[in-house]
Length: 464
Image 1 (cartoon, rainbow, N blue to C red):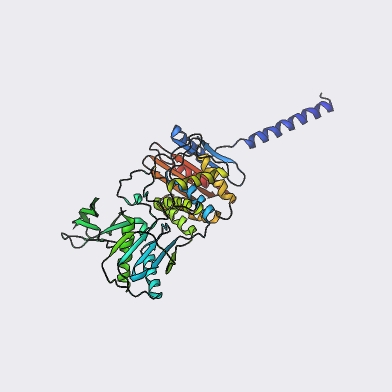
Image 2: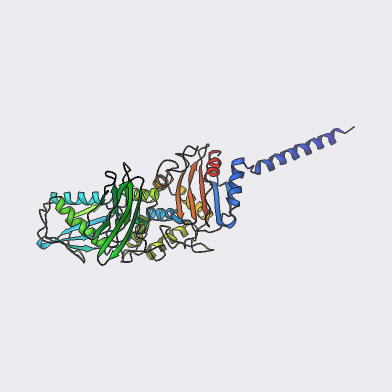
């Protein structure tokens, strides 16, 4: 028979053992089937993946696979550009484009790097000039694009010779993202289709023919020939098919702006007295009219929702121009992006990390999942720009680059993320609201031709 003291001692030992076992069990995260499946998919990619999921409210890491391994994140790097631009320039920053009415009816146009200036803005400018009393002009246009340097293409950008719209040049004066679209519409079967451009530039010519037939297979090519840019079309478009559209870059953005201004002035009721003459120079005196862009928060949303490389690279140059008060360069802007990251302890120039492009259109950037988690944690702390940045991210199954992804899943309309895509590269960096109301940070970067396991990721997040 046990003595009472011994019985008490054994009982206390049992209680302590059970208590410690409970603490140990509660400290060990039990993987759900969805988490196990996601981790298995990610680990099968070996060193071609970097992934981390963390609760931003309590700092708990919920998933980690090669989290510190730096890989090319493609366009997810735009998150760094957006953060830096909103921090240094402010959410309400506006780009300015100034119009000077000079002697003899000449015009000088001074650009401020606005990457969002489009045809509708030019229409509003002409209407404003009419209200200012401008009745005609000489046809002579001086372009001042000195806000940026004349290096139209960042040094580390991929495919600098590509005629596709994603490779548009970055200038101090821009029009329609420095792109132009060709349109093809079907007519009757056996007849030539209707072909047109979204703006009738004189220096861009369309040649070839597309026939209306069964099925759609339109071919296109674009080349430069002297001062001309020539678009060649061929193939066929189906009877009753939707309009076929292809955007491409404009090689000479300053000439494009000058010609667009000349034509819009005539269309808008301010006729010219002479032929169009466009030259480069500087504007002096006070402008007759200054056009202001929409706030930077809106422009950042355009960039992130649709992963617009043109806007990202323009923001990098704008940072250099405005913060350093000099002609904006890509290198100068990137130094500011890297410095902004270093302020909260992220050195993107160490241990295999590299940021040489603010748009992500390069093979040379390298960041890890844990780097992106650090950025998301910093955004969470920066209340002045938090709403704008979160709202700028594509919404799963709803809009932007995530519009066709995660549709019909529980994360549709809840997961927000900046996507990245290059040949052999996929990435997703964003946030998801848990059932408890916590923000869950998500960062997955995969290289070497692998794909993000979206089904497993969606199920894993929906369980949180």
